[in-house]
Length: 68
Image (cartoon, rainbow, N blue to C red; front, side, top):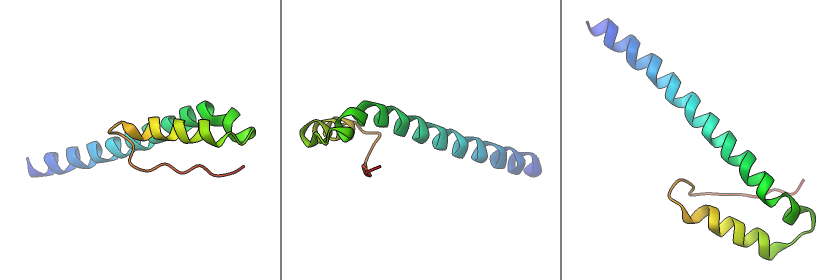
């Protein structure tokens, strides 16, 4: 019984990590699409407003925009 529980926890742990990585990657892609025009035109006001909106939710705590 203990072996089955250990194997199950190991399998679920990997699945949770994979889901977390996929969610982070999707969020980054959506945000990049949302701010691409602002980055290209260096529209800092739009960029700042979009960042503030993204950070206002509970799911993001840190956001960094890098120049291409």
